[in-house]
Amino acid sequence: MDVLSEANRRRTFAIISHPDAGKTTLTEKFLLYGGALLGAGAVKARDGRRAAASDWMELEQKRGISITSTALQFPYRGCAVNLLDTPGHRDFSEDTYRVLAACDAAVMVLDSAKGIEPQTLKLFEVCRERRLPLLTFFNKWDRPGRETLELLDEVEKLLGLPAVPVTWPVGFAGDFRGVIDRRDGSYTRYTRVARGSQIAPEELIDPERAAREEGLAWHTAMEDLELLSEVGADLDPKAFLANESTPAFFGSALTNFGVGKLLDAVIELVPPPEPRVDLEGQRRPLDSGFSGFVFKVQANMDPSHRDRIAFIRVCSGRFERGMVVTHGRTGKPFNTKYAATLFGQERETVEEAYPGDVVGLVNATDVRVGDSLFDPNDAPVIFPPIPSFAPEFFMTARVRDTGRFKQFRRGIAQLDEEGVVQVLRDPEFGDQAPLLGAVGRLQFEVATYRLENEFGAATELSPTNYRVARRTDEASEPALRRMRGVAVLRRADGSRLALFESPYWLERVESENPELTLDRLVAEGMAG
Ligand code: G4P
Image (cartoon, rainbow, N blue to C red; front, side, top):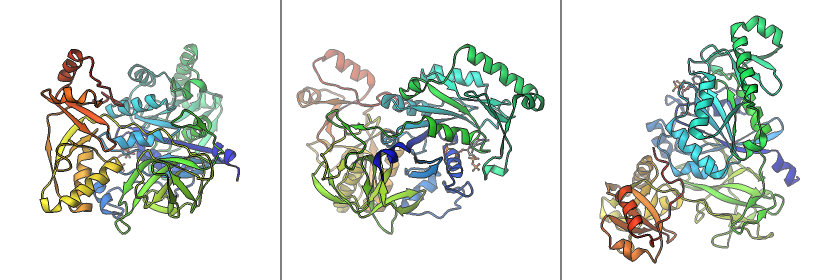
């Protein structure tokens, strides 16, 4: 099989949205349109319809949220579409950032009645930082909502990104009939089916008939379109690829209206995998030997296995199950006998994979987020690490029963490797009471749940006064340590973080001591 042509038909992307905007529904509908689901409703367990697959899932179910990420692959129009799921909980977490590091584009789903919501904004910042091409889907058009132009305006104002409509709705929000494709002027009218469980029947209707049958809705749409052409809001693929404008689509994931158009656009607009730049700035050709990097590690997804899966994005070459690859960080050989893809909660063995695909390596002990793997028969390659986020919440962790300290220490190390929380240590105090840093509070909940249930180490978390973190270095450490309201702690990789009790305090320290190293971390100040 030719690696280049296989890579060329890959489309790897994620859906980002504020909770409840419709990410899960849209995911289901993509699968429905991709022929991977017979009836919608199988991705997310709702109302306890599906038994918990693991105690890990139990936490998800109790909270009614999705914590784990899965990667789904389905065929569509001759392409292999890889849809990476980003965690859907309200609390922003680092997982999302890592998933986006493995994507070539993202689809931003907005609730048309709400527009841009806080979580959308944060996720968008990550996309912008990665210069990830972004498609926008104005969802829930079947319900009363806001005006089209007002929504476009909001995207441009709040994100600083012009939204260029590719499709345009006929019928206002709540009376949604179909969409006009601005690229060729064609009008697709949809028919509702119960809960959108099947592909929505659609009909291509010529303008004369549309004018007759849709009446005012059609004329309003025509006027809007004229207005759009006057301002020259046309799709520019180059601007899209550079994250300088976002093609926008109107639709309803629930009723399937406009879903096919959006999926078509994923195939047409999302770029196939490109040679990935390594740590030295070299581009690894797609058809060189296998290489990939780990963007997520997850332990104990299935209690009957108690295993640990490392999710790898393939960057070059052909991956074959059973091949022995080199683990970049340790230089050790790594057997890939147990490679799997995950479809929802089902696990399937994967035999081969190409650039853009995601492979889950089971029992990947020692493998951490950011690690590179490559075929030992080709040039070694190390991809740049995935930057870690600036934690915004800090808690001190202590094991409740000191007799369980060993388990506690093992658990903490595991959670740190997986990146569930960031573990910060004071070299003077060692592992007794590490500080846990998180981007969202839910990370703490997951950490204590897992420490107790997987490692048998019930843990108590107590709040600290720290609010802001900066990266610092050895030279600045002694001076910072002498200051009130400042702590200097270490991450597992040896890097130093200086914690401050308030942004105000940090500002003062910075202005009075310009010689100190106090670097911003990735995605600083995105909390809101
Ligand atoms: P999320 O993953 O982004 O959190 O959102 P999810 O798809 O779970 O959708 C949140 C709610 O919005 C669901 O309703 C879902 O049915 C509804 N929804 C999604 N897309 C559309 C749409 O296009 N139109 C309308 N009207 N509703 C939509 P729910 O009541 O929370 O769940 P359920 O009882 O419908 O399953």
